[in-house]
Length: 305
Image (tube, rainbow, N blue to C red; front, side, top):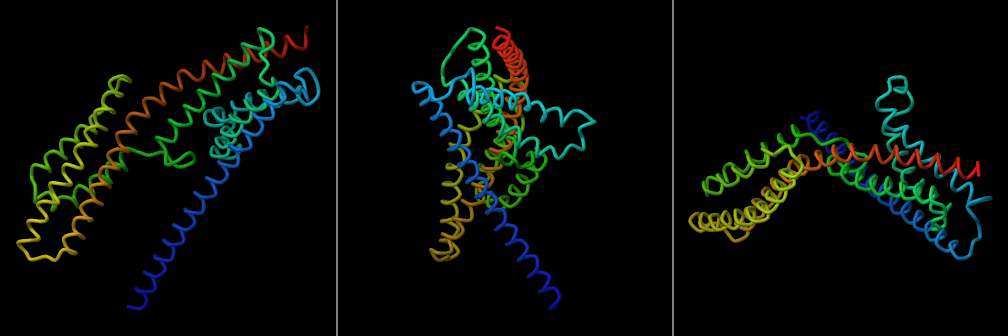
C-alpha cells in the first residue's frame, strides 16, 4: 500500500513539475517575443529618424552594411526549407533550430533593409527590390499566423485530426448521461459535430463552412446549456438537492460543454487554416524568388554603375 502511495505521490509531483515548467516556458517565450518586438520597433524608429538627419547613408558605412547583412539574412531564410527537404542536410542541427532562425531572420532582415534605405525610395531597381521585400515580409506574417493556428503555438507540435477527434469522443461520452435529460439537445450536438467533421475542400466553400459553424456554435452551446440547466433544476427539485449541489452540477455541465466546444472549434480551425496554409505556400515562394532576383539586380546595379 505504501509503495502505491509513493508511486501516486511521485506521479503527482512530476505532473506539478511539468505544469510549472510549461508555465515558465510560456512566460519566457512571451517575454522574449515582446523584447524582440520592441527591439525591432526601436530599429525602425531609428531608421525613421535617419530619414531626415542622415547620420548614415545607403552608399557607405553603417547604412551600406545594414543592407548587406539584411539581404544576407533574407537569403539565409532558404536554409529552413532546404533543411526540411534535402537529405544531405538532415544532420545539420534540428529542424526546430532552423525554424526559429527563420522566424528571427524573417523579421530582422526586413528591419535592417529598412535601416539601410532609411525610408528613402531611391532608384527604380531599388524601389522594386524594396517593395518585393515588403511583400515577402507581409506574406511571412500571414504564414506565421496560419502556422500558429494549426500547431500548438509557434514552436509547438502540429495538431492532428485524430488526437482532437479522440478528445471530442471522450467528452461526448462524458456528456452522454447529461444528454439523457434532454434527448433533443443530444441530437443537435450530434448533428453539429457531424457538420464540423464534414468540411468541404475548396477554399471559398471552406471559408463559408468556417463562418457557418462558428455562428452555429455561438448559438447552439448557450441554448443547450440553458436547456440542461433547466432540466437539472427540475431533477434537483424532485430529488431534494440543495442549492449548492445544483450549482455544482450546473458548473460541471458548463465546464464540459465549453471543453467540447473548444475541441470542435480546434477541429474546425484545423480544417480551415490547413487549406489557407497550403494556398499561402503556393503564393509565398514566387514572391520570395521575385525578391531574390530583384535584390541581386539592385546590388549589381549599385556596384556596376
